[in-house]
Image 1 (cartoon, rainbow, N blue to C red):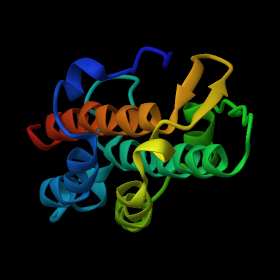
Image 2: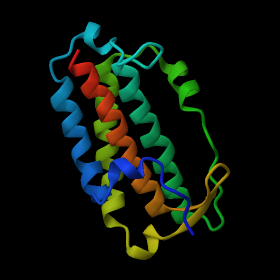
Image 3: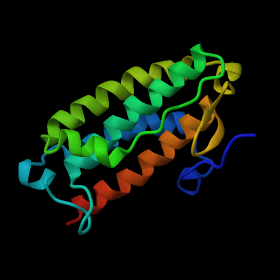
Image 4: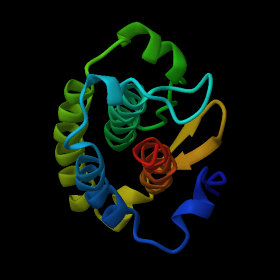
Length: 160
């Protein structure tokens, strides 16, 4: 049985592949005219700025899509956890446009893979030390809900 999906309440009954396909253009629409000062704005005290939020989306594209590929190609794969805050610290500060270009490119590549998966591939299990048994489908749902979570943060910055 799959673990509880983080951000499931944000995803609801929405198709996760549709959310994953739409998020990059929704982010681009929000930030298309932002200068470096706007990218440096945070949605709350002690929280990531806009460039870091997008960089975090990049990191999760890297981390979670790597897990999908490994789960699909290795029997008994166990995911290695990572600390997103530490990863942000390794690459900050970063220009927002660089983070955005990386996010949109990686998402396009990963989405092509996700859209090609069979029902059996999407059900393929792996283990995660924090979440227990998960599946490729679980990962896709987490990514989609995670997109909505951070899209909200970017909308908050846009409204400032």
